[in-house]
Length: 457
Ligand code: 5AD
Ligand code: SF4
Image 1 (cartoon, rainbow, N blue to C red):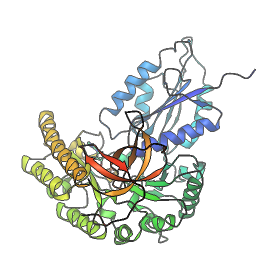
Image 2 (cartoon, helix red, strand yellow):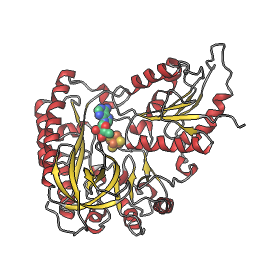
Image 3 (tube, helix red, strand yellow):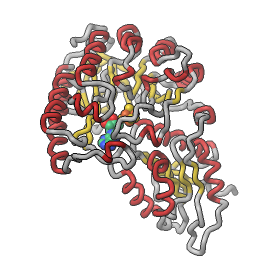
Image 4 (tube, rainbow, N blue to C red):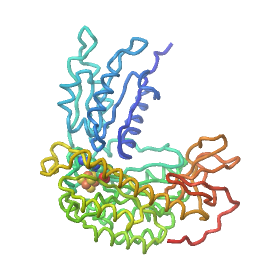
C-alpha cells in the first residue's frame, strides 16, 4: 500500500501577480507528487503567499502562522512556508518572531520551493516538534526564475501569462522595487510558445501580466515591445481575447495605443493607475506623470478605441495631501470616466521614501477621504454599466451565478454579466445583449448570433 500523499494548500494574499505565483508554487508541489487541498487545516504543507502592498500584510501573516502552528485535528504537524513580498522584505524578522515557520522564500526564488522543503525537512526537531532552524532563500538572482520554471499549460478558458516582473519606477510609497527587484522581461519566443500551448489546452482568453506590463521588452533592447507581442499572439487561431495588466502611464507608447485601434482581439479595457489627481502629490510620489499628461494619455487611447473602459488605482492621504489635492483626485474620477477603480488609504511601508516624509495625514482624514472617493468611483461604475444597456456583445462564461441556471461571464469591458443560458457551460463565449446595469455587474440575455455594431463612446 502506498503512503498517503502529502497535501498542500497555497493561500494568496494579494495582487494578480501574487495569485499567479501561488498557482505556480502549487504546480511545483503537484509536480513533486503532492496533492492540493482547499483547507489549510487539513494540509501538511501550507504556503502563505504574502503581499506587501496590502495593509497589515505582516499582521495577517503572523495571525495565520499562530493558528497553523497548532497541531492538526489528527495530531499531524504542518510545514509552514512564508512566501511572497513580506517574506522577501522581512525574512529575518519572520524567523525571529515566528520560529514555527519552516521555509522563507522570496518572490524571485520560489522555483526553489521543493529544494527548500527538502532542506527544511532535514533540520532536526526539538522535543516539542519545532525545528531548530529554517530554510531561507530571499536572494535576488540575476538569472530570472522564469528560465527555471516549467511552462504552464492547463489554466482553463481564461489564462494568465506573466511576461515581465519587477519595477524600476520607485514610486515613493511602494515596496515593489525593493521586494521584486528591477524590471525583467521574459524572452519573446518563450511567451509565444507558452501562449500557443495554453490555447492548445483550451484557453480562449490570455491576460498578459506584469508589475509594469507595458514596459515589457524595454530592457531587452532588441525591439521587443508589448504591442509586438500582442500582435503576434493575435495570430494564434483559437485565441479570441487578449488583455494586459498592470500598466504605467509613462510606458503607454504610441504602438501600444495603436494596437487598441488595430487588433480586434485586444479587449477594450485598460487598467492605468493614476494614484492622485494632484500634480503636486504625483511629483512627491515620483510618478513621472502629471494630472494633465495622464488625462492626455487617456484621450489618446480613447481616440484609438472610443469604447475603451478605463480603470485606475488611487491612494488617498499620501503625506502632505491637502483638501485641495484630494478634491483634484475626486475631480479626475469624473473627468477620466472610469468604468471601475481601486482605492487605498496611504499606509506606511518602512524603508520607502514616503515613510519618512513630514505631514503624514491623520487616519480619520484618510478614512473620510476614502469614503468620498469610493462614493465617486461607485457612481462612475454605475453610470458606465447603465450606459452599456442595449449593447450587443460577447461574454466569456467564467463561473456559476447565485441562482440555479445562472452563469456569470465577462464582457469585453470586464464587466461581470449575469446570464441564464440553457445548455451553455463555463468557458463558452456567447452572444448576448446587455439588459440592465448595476454598481458591480450587468445583466444580459442570450441572442442567437452576434451582429457587430459600433459602440458609443
Ligand atoms: N499605501 C497604499 N496603497 C498602496 N499601493 C501601493 N503601495 C501602497 C501604499 N504604501 C497601491 C497603489 C498600487 C496598488 C497595487 O496598491 O495604488 O497601484
Ligand atoms: Fe510600485 Fe510604482 Fe512600480 Fe507600481 S510603478 S510597482 S506603484 S513602484
